[in-house]
Image (cartoon, rainbow, N blue to C red; front, side, top):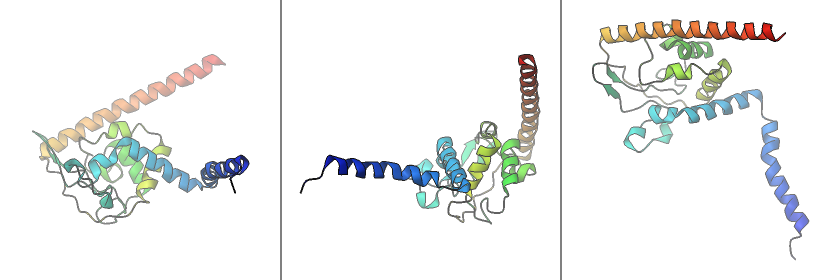
Length: 194
């Protein structure tokens, strides 16, 4: 017995609409994690933070577990991309959402209280994300498997570390001044449009 076009159309409709229904029923937390996954993939976090990536064989079983290859920058030192998984001892498992947001915004570890987040991490670019997007990235990172991988600390001379910290502080002041100017301009535009 042959398949009728109406049965095929009905089956096709069910297949096409099922993901939409599942998405519509997702919780806000699920949507936040999905948004974070999208942003992590878009940002290429895997490229630096997954072992083996720089050697051409990314170890997806240790996804975002911290690199096994460092960036050596002449005159600055050697930087190892850290473990971003929720491992409590070697990753972000002991971090709070607020600490993560502040670290991304300030370019300093442990919620703005630690050493500078070092180049080549593009924290000033990532720091331009909305609070909602940064929180989504954190939610995603907290929902991937925890990988125990104690990545070596950066090897940076103290004078270089101090210089990086001072340049970040200067950059933060400039970013805050620009944001304030944009906010004032927006407020003036809104008043002028009334």
